[in-house]
Image (cartoon, rainbow, N blue to C red; front, side, top):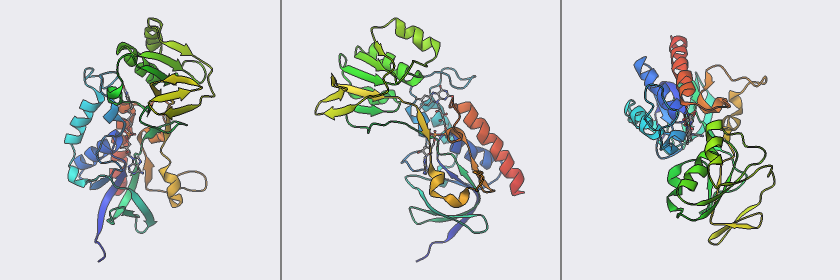
Length: 282
Ligand SMILES: Cc1cc2nc3c(=O)[nH]c(=O)nc-3n(C[C@H](O)[C@H](O)[C@H](O)COP(=O)(O)OP(=O)(O)OC[C@H]3O[C@@H](n4cnc5c(N)ncnc54)[C@H](O)[C@@H]3O)c2cc1C
């Protein structure tokens, strides 16, 4: 039996801070939207931010995860399709999209807010942790020997945290450390061993141990930065030969490959785009 096609103004692919903010703005502007999120819950990168840091100027004590909870409460989640992918897109009076659930949605505008994923040449495993999130350290016992790979803020922040939890931490950077000076200063006051200029690293989990260039560790944690989502390559008809995007298709948030990913920038882009879409929809 063929399913009815839902007709909406904006289909948002990705339910992180960008997608949620856009949905909230579109609601306020009286526009219809749906979010398609590949994971079982909304939130994206903010799900992994457990501590207050450089968040929202007026809310310095709020963690990313707490901020996210407030954002989620501000949108109607019946319009969010979780654990789903966009499988097909064709041009038909806008964009006709087929979801993995079989649902068909025709949207006048298409917005990709798919964020970025931790980049790693190594596959995550029980003892090889890839990407941020302090909660991932719950299984690491104090006194464990841990190799942290990376030289940026993420790597140093996680290395310092493990050190505070009495782990023996070695830090391996592919070239020089490029973390902010506050982290570098904290690092100097620790016994973390730092190895710079290490472009060639072999990592292998062997039973209860991880081998890093023949050195034995209990865990390895990889923070090599982020790679923007490449979902657009799945739908070539959305791109134009001059590497522009077809009219009606937009990107926001970490997908736009901002070198310094930021909640405020993502939310600003979402708010601005909502106004632009509202204007264009007439
Ligand atoms: C630990 C941590 C700390 C941070 N600290 C700060 C900070 O202090 N200050 C700050 O401003 N920023 C910080 N950031 C960065 C900030 O979280 C990001 O800039 C912001 O979350 C980007 O939002 P986004 O919506 O673009 O992407 P994301 O939040 O990554 O959301 C993208 C969503 O799209 C989904 N998706 C991807 N592909 C598909 C697909 N094909 N189909 C459907 N869904 C898809 C993903 O599952 C995800 O839910 C931090 C990030 C992390 C991880």
